[in-house]
Image (cartoon, rainbow, N blue to C red):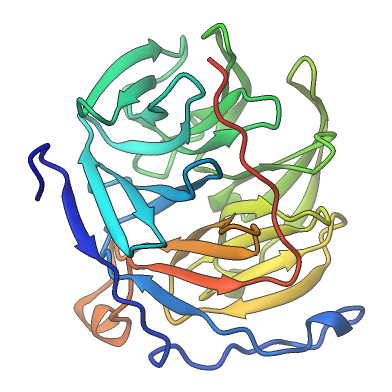
Length: 324
């Protein structure tokens, strides 16, 4: 632990514990008929790892441990991970143009000063029940920060999707959500994707990029019970959606029509969210969770809660800093 109270731990890069990835030969996926090696990049042992954000300028990966109330910053060039404590459960974050981070804590949106390890209030949503917390979130390509809320008991549809703009105006655009997840946008910013995990459904909306408004919701991807539930997601340069399967042991690449292109198998039951990073944006970093796994399951999954990486043939897109 350094003088600022920030813990530093070297990454443990390991590949041999990961079984060979199973790649089903889906129709039209000829270019992807190859083995993909998934590596455990950092043994974080997070309770609920989530919300990765690649900082293109600093070449760092930020991510959170929601239930551990930690913000992480991982440096792939050195293998060093720093972490900061948060005063509340932290659901998601983004780098801020003016410095530091914007974060969605349990009660609302805050700015986080990494040098001072301090959160400062940015906005409190008008309709945010006491049992709710914020979960998945990220910036759109215009630099607004979005985050979905959820019932922390994962039972009641009291959550929604909120947008924080550069003037710190907070507006709710979706309601009736149990567990918000899978938020991302198409490369042209004309489509927004978002899921309610217990309903096993990922929706698409028409997105108006200048105003940041949504319309025309329709079902895009429907999970079966054997698929687990949809968790975090991101989009690559071809507009395909990379989606983590909670309790599904994999990350799947879907085309913009919701058809499966590729499955990447994981050695953990609960991969939570993918994020493109690296100098060429062709590395996919994936967080994971250990929460509510039994002792037997933890023994069988020694890397539950760790940070993973694999290489993709199609690169991702740079994440936009929050403009407020």
